[in-house]
Image 1 (cartoon, rainbow, N blue to C red):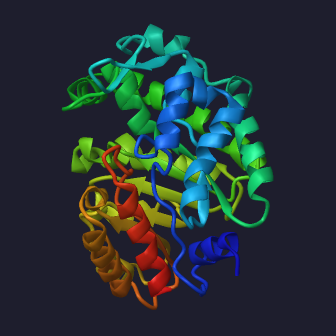
Image 2: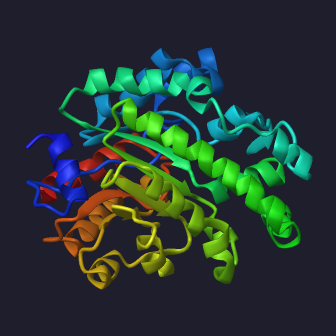
Length: 341
């Protein structure tokens, strides 16, 4: 069984010869080869240049026995394609070119021609598919409409999301119009990714927990549900919603094939409660990868033991790997995965 078969079998709840594994933000600053490339070209250039995006996507696969490659890109390519560009602040975090505050600004956003504006993503995916062949799975991804809207309404990264939430409460009609536009753009983007050869797509609802519990359906879930319903029937969609693992039943209602859970979730209990309705992915704390190999090896083995015998399971981190992660710790993680089988 090759890596691609292993990954797709787990997504479909079928038995595998070992637990498939990949991890969020596989490429990044913890890798010296990534840092060297970024120093020469810059992040945005790498994202928008298919040859560079392909190279960065493949870098972690050359070091580690990973079962699925995930495209090197950014969720904010969607706002940029709609007319609201982004950049990185010198002090850290994201800055959008401007902040959405009025209905006129929303009207000026375009959800058309997404395929043309993001053709560099399609080209990178096609290159990756050729490189991987049938040996390893290829994942696409994108942000949820709510998570994308928080950046667009806040004008960038935020600590409290107060502007986005105030806009939701005070301007419901405008909020609805904005989320409709983002949703249409994301649907077109995901259809393009599917046509370019991806085996599955992960939706990142990274700021799910910013929405009040009673408003999460209106802010986010309904839009994710619309996206999945608009895609080809039975295409594997993975939903990652950080900070709301207590709402797994609601997340299952989106039509996702798999849920990716953060490190706060009780993975075995969640698996049992869902009765195999969806696959689960997760959920090693990425902070462990900044410690020592023995600590990582033991923590990985404990997690895998707790999920032993559960077919619909894919090993992953509970969030993206950090720049402070140590390569020997990542090696130790995969040693434990391969030993467990």
